[in-house]
Image (cartoon, rainbow, N blue to C red; front, top):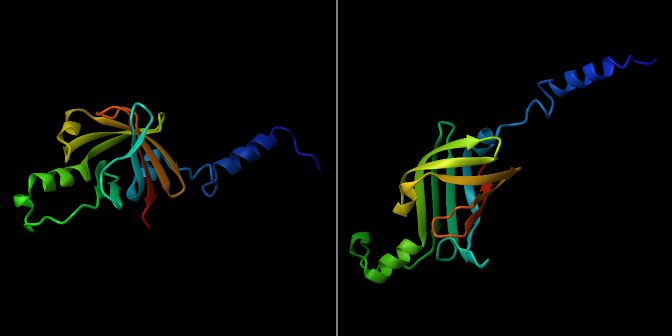
Length: 168
């Protein structure tokens, strides 16, 4: 039995937009972002092409959370020595320097640009106060449970690249 040519496109459309089909279930970028992500790697590519860690200290750990409300939280922290006084308000200049160089943390709101595959953060506060002067745009690529972010307009020059794994 031969089907009329008009039936074939109709069958394709019925399949494509069936609620159980992969096409109908494709998530938006915002839906893919929402959740908790654990840091895999974080580095800066300086203008001469050299790669350096985003923060000092080893190991480096991080957590990034995107809420469906549009709020986000970002922490990347490298290991550093304990404070001798056991009081963060009584650190020596060297301890303060080590602490500042090993932490980048900020939070605020985010908006997604589906067409550009990017999101823009509006910083409410940051451990690096200069970040709060202007919104920050991040290019994003999500494949399965892996998210790759790049900040092509890093304040200090070059660009930041981070890789995250979705926390289950």
